[in-house]
Length: 180
Image (tube, rainbow, N blue to C red):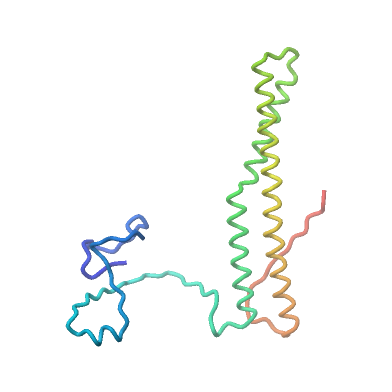
């Protein structure tokens, strides 16, 4: 992004260079075409904005059919699901619970416990319970998003059956695990 009368010589490349706050030096005025034609005596500065895009994802367009729109929604749900999985870090929480439980077992094996150890055991139990509660809530969130993803896929699949053709290349592989 670069303004023609910009104080920067080159292109802005890093996100830190781009500020979304208002700056009085570069106050752009939005005018309708009619007001520009009527007020010929007013001096209006024109700026050119260059955007360099490597990828554009259209989610809704007039030439999209129903299946394309559903596939777009499916991809969006999948991205939400994937980001949620990464954000929650479930393996890290499971490992944390295991480490705390091992430490608790070591304390329990000792015959005589000091007051400090008893307090630490109490705090560790609280930490384990909080981690288990967080893990259960996270699993509920993940299952909800997975069900949304699966339901959207079933909707696409049923639409393909009804229309007897597929207009997109989206596929979902579902792996069923046995219940414990």
